[in-house]
Length: 196
Image (cartoon, rainbow, N blue to C red):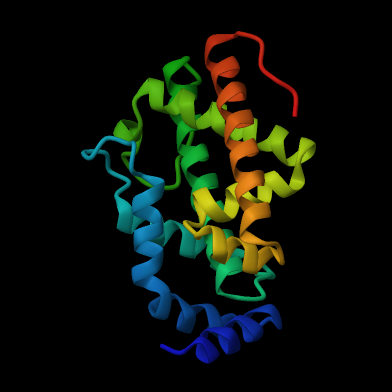
């Protein structure tokens, strides 16, 4: 795989070529699989949405989008990571809904009830809500979190994707992590959180 091939496929994808994603996914599959493993690292090993299923679900979501806007590999991985995050949040919401007697709702994958424990579902949702607030309060910090945590990019790769120095990315990363910890703790414990 060459960078040129990936760049060309991303260009075709941005221009509406539906087949470009089909060619791109096999080239990046191993990296996407590693990304999905990072997304699932704190979850139970016996749930039914395994790493491969998460990659496949992300692919289906990306394939359904009318436009996939990614200028380069880093932005594509950030987009894939965000898509995986949204899938995990959807499953956490489904888990919470069932826990609270929310009735029977169709869920995209069959038999995902054992996907997350109740505590893990609450943590995923608290993190998602905190990330939404971070995006409004500190867009740069939110973007750094997307690239670093969800995309698995290094400080240097994140800086390159955002046009920032690694030092600036490090400061934004440190500040965003601290803010998110407070917000997630506040959400889970009902205590006062900080403002960015």
